[in-house]
Length: 262
Ligand code: 13P
Image (tube, rainbow, N blue to C red):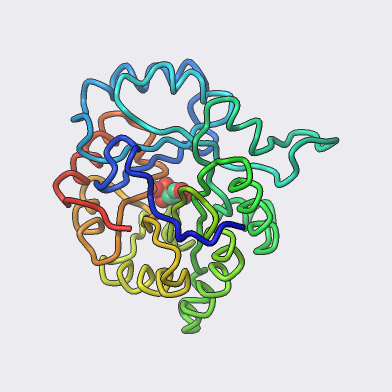
């Protein structure tokens, strides 16, 4: 594995700005993806933020073709094998060939609904890096873990399962998504986010300098404050990324919050 530290590619559209990423989850088929961009593209200022969309696999091409703004596209999950008798799965290589530049890995819904483990997350990260797909790895604690004062222990364990594999990646990101804030309307305060992001950065170590995004009930009304918090380089948005007008307002918030870090 290469020993060069990860440094975010300056070639990405909007590089150096906040990352505003949408995770459509299991929403927006190809026709809806086209309709989304017909409305979203004229509503956003080009290059003000780094726009990323994690679409369903089947909508990736329609989204990438329909976007009339510079944006990057990714899938929401991969398998760690390159090919084989694994019905229903998609490999990193196939996602790349289909036009994905990034992939989410270890999203809380994958971990908690589909039982994905830290070890599997590690394997998927290595597969993505091998295939030249930028991993966007999600971490975050359950409410009971936070209440039990285990935030730091949980984040260090989750990050520890993949941090070593990021050292060879050309590009990568980490998303801190507290499980209790996903789809609940309940958001971490900017202070909570800054604390957790500080832990994630420290667990990644000095050799891995990648953007760390916040996710969990991000809305136009809280996006500026969250993206202005220390160590928050952008947002990963679920529900509020489905409506083009609402998501355009979050992109605007990213421009107001200013340059990203990483
Ligand atoms: P919501 O923005 O709907 O809370 O979802 C967050 C998320 O899971 C993004 O990956």
